[in-house]
Image 1 (spheres, rainbow, N blue to C red):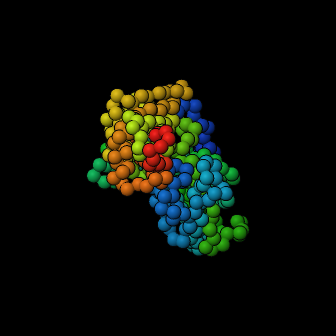
Image 2: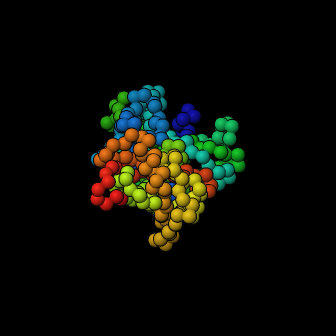
Image 3: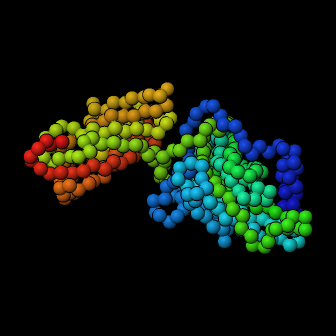
Length: 343
């Protein structure tokens, strides 16, 4: 009976229109704290998004769907199984994705994501957050049931963390709730309900800003766009520098990077006097121009046994003053000859 009381409570709000399921996008801009927010990254090629844990209520199924999506190449598709309750004449089920993130205590956050379901009359969105202290002890929980319509829509939920919160476990859940009485036909025991999630965003604000993709890996490192010049390097070259351009995602400032932390393949550090920062596009975008010792790079490459006309991936990494790590890679071609121009 406890479940029925909750359902009645939620449906009263549903009828009164007090649960807002689609919120207008805010005009401001804040950084998206979510890792792999549009489920694009699948480096282990298992057909599921990296970083995320999935609610394993067997026999739920999850897929990366390249046909039904809003951002990037895929969305997360969920086939949620419904469990019948013959005495109370309803079916329930749930499926969803979970992500563990560091948070600041006593801080207001907005979680938002886009949802589409084939069964809006029987499926609710359930954004929730479970908070833990620095020792891993559970201290608080926030959640809200939100109704869905047909088509893609943005679900928004605002919460304030506990004064002792250190880590939050975010759950993006869809819940099945369907009567199978004679008044509602078509629902069968063991039926699957199909939904999709895309464009997840967590930001320190009391309202959502327009969704934007971030490039934060599962270890919390920010992925930057890296270009290394020359893109063909002659091991016989006598030049002094290798030039690297680092383009940061929107909202990150190159002036906040600790230049002394920037290194190439974890072995060659940038020349501190060769780091230049440029902000543009109303200060939202930032890039760095840095230089590494060409002599040191050639020495490193020779130690790897690289051969003429081979390609090599070079990785640049570093950190912001606040400790946030960043990384990025570029591939260059290697030649080893004396004649002609030595790049």
